[in-house]
Length: 177
Length: 227
Image (tube, rainbow over all chains, first blue to last red; front, side, top):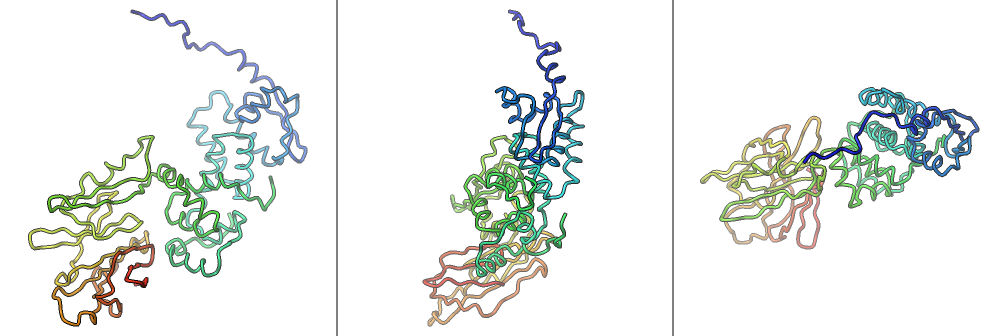
């Protein structure tokens, strides 16, 4: 028996999506800088989407945990991912280049912002990049970069050097990147 | 944000560490601080780490059935996404007559196979099904305990330590000590090492090899030697 398809998945344009594209929101960083962004790009952040849905956006959305420099980077990312006609391949290439030039400190800022704004794709990309950068690095480098003080006793430290000898040898010299 | 002294929250550190590509880096991170060490030893860490890095983690179980050794691998990770199946990675073609003598946490095994009256030593990397036969140690001494350890991955280097004893029971055997041989993959030969004063009477119960040391549990005292 032929089933009648009552809801064909057509290419008809969703008027709501169109509206989002033309509507702009203003995001305000912790240091008072304001950025305009289309709603369709902004709602790739689940946190912003929730604010818009709850209608507490009211023109300007304050983001007191994100500074201007970081917010500008995040917006670049959101705009690219909301772009019409950008293929997955293009987006992947963009992601790669987007994070490749960033210093570790910047990556930390971006990952915290992505976490706060709940932008899954960006979060994953930056975390992966941070992990990649840790390859072949010394314990001291990791501590310095992540702002961690060792809380091991000197004896424990010695023990670690023996137990994980292969991790302590042959690491890159500590250069900041 | 924007501060230079930002410390990442634990859940984020957890996620980042599960994305590390090499076990060396993971060991580096265990040495960073107590908190990080705890994070890595959390029970949910290794399954996720293995899935993301496509690494295998688990145990070898060896049993004897009808006078033949029988080995299987029990994986710690569940691989729900079906990306790799632990059983078909390795043990499918693990030979029945191969006895696992020693293993280490880098996934390298030392095995021996008996063909008639002949024994042959092998080193094996089960995940890639690579086998390499080794020169035999002094087989007229009876194997008591074997340990294998990996010293580096690039270049790949390992050592095998074997304790053995003379087959014949002799009077006054409490004055005899075990014979110790070490095989170094760099020299590709066994070399006898003097001066491991473990007496026959100090019963050896078990062997544990961590990255750079082998521990033998003896009666009452724990001994440790770095070859």
